[in-house]
Image 1: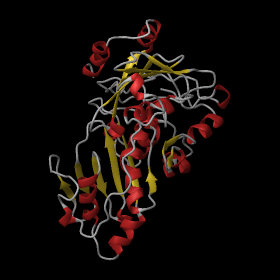
Image 2: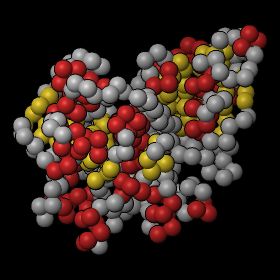
Image 3: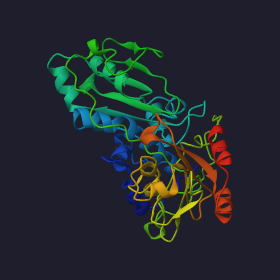
Image 4: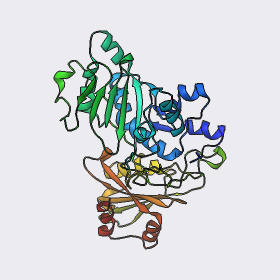
Length: 368
């Protein structure tokens, strides 16, 4: 498959994509293999790569950096071409099949699960090891505090691969002594449970800030600037071995609003059954902005809650997209909300009727 990033301008714009508060796509595209051998390390499916990278950064890298300080990215995204070259020439790259859902962010594993890996160095951990500490302490701390899928530690600079996955394995291995598996799948972990393995480590700072996107399979985040990121990519293409299509409905990529593309926001309350709002310019602000759905369910939006009643659902979609978002409050979910995909055709149908039954809206959450 050919990437939809076909010009320098598109690549430059793609590199500016913000994955989380402190991480941008550009730092994950750097590859010594690609630089030295004159290869392009760009995703074949840019939007999928962005979505997976957002999960990695928000769930794992942001809380690590908030707690331990600066994180240095050694290796992040690898294109299938770059990874295959590295594997064939014994440049410390596993096969493409093993790296789908790992360093190759834009293709799923053979089981159909998306994920993303970065090899990172943490100066805090480098200093800790130089003072006589051991890498295993960090492994146990992460196991107790973060929703990782796998960790793989290396001898130099206490570097390690950290992976986020839709289907987390929760396993830790190492090439550094003691080599092999340190933490097997199924090993219990929660804050403080294994504290004897990381004495003196700081408490988790900050919070996991995952990006909960809206499904938009035909959208691209790397279009020419003049098109305001509004081109398209082939969202159906995948490796020949893949057994599943795109990510699940409540965990698939969204795009920023392009110029001229209206964002619609509707809310369903116990009293007001179909409230229209028109103060959102992007999908992200409509879902997680100060006046978005997440704030609505927390009681933080400047509306008359007594007049409208308790909020039950929020619905968000963008003109030109095939799917939109249906949102409700759900304890235990990031930011206290759950987001699922719903066809825009259905949303427009509801809008024309000025409402829809609560039962029908609730049914969409049981389908995913």
